[in-house]
Length: 117
DNA sequence: AGCATGACGCCTA
DNA sequence: ATAGGCGCCATGC
Image (cartoon, rainbow, N blue to C red; front, side, top):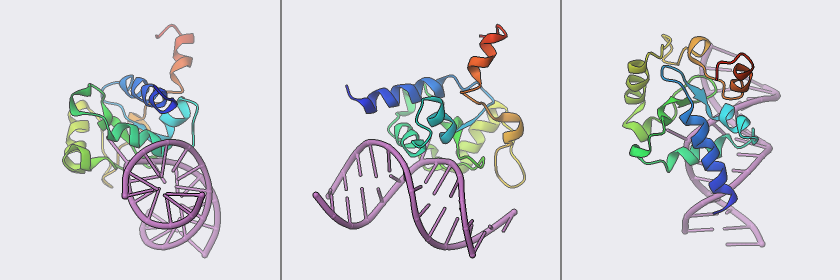
């Protein structure tokens, strides 16, 4: 057990909380776990994630709404199809409609104040 | 110990 | 809006 394992555990916890039909970014996750400069590490943590991990890693995209993890899902088009199947909207540019499908893990605690849980 | 690489992100031209 | 360069953090050789 090392610090990196803890980091990865936090990453998985955050990613697992991403609602269906929503997406988030590496930087956002990194910031949510207290390491806003470790966006690359978030990607690495997801990279070692097995397909049957139950972690919706396909909902994690780049800061610009661009799909970057296509190689792990059989291509960006595959990942895009997965997201679209969940209700995520895409722009003509080929990017995710961040305006409506962006999930902020950091924003979640505020929802608790409203009793959303 | 030093160099190169990577599911990223921000700054500058 | 697009393209290129630099920085961060950890890993591998």
